[in-house]
Image (cartoon, rainbow, N blue to C red; front, side, top):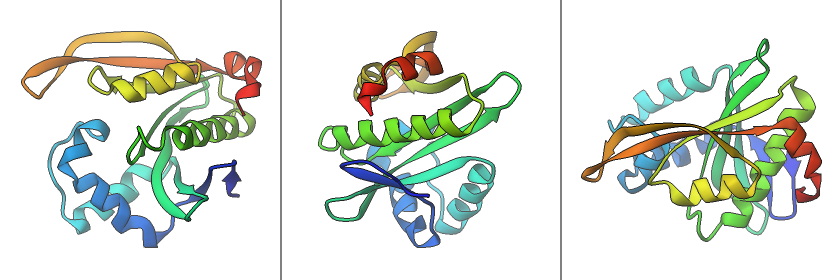
Length: 178
């Protein structure tokens, strides 16, 4: 199935990449961006939790074509067949350096979701301190739907949580992005 662009391809999860995901999950310098739980897990705990969390999700790894390195992941969570939405999250290491790869992998994933599932809307949640991710989602067509004020205490102050969405019509109208 690999979904391939000019810079990246999205590939299914393989067991050999679990250690890479574990290292990202354990890296305290980036953990606050990807996880509300600040507890550092053991590898055994991580594996168990990973397979439980991704069992019914669409979980793909982002591979850079220039060197075949795994640089991130993108994940579809909680597909709701009745209300026709899905939540997405993802991670890419060094987002400032790999921003174009993140954008391309996101667009490939959104296209895959809209083409293969009866989804009308894709949602993503983020915190106000994750400025680069918010900026990138807006560039990809996401709109703010909800703001929860002072939701999370981090780095000495409270931060808001946002829910952004991308509807299928907006995505299809701007297919020139792909």
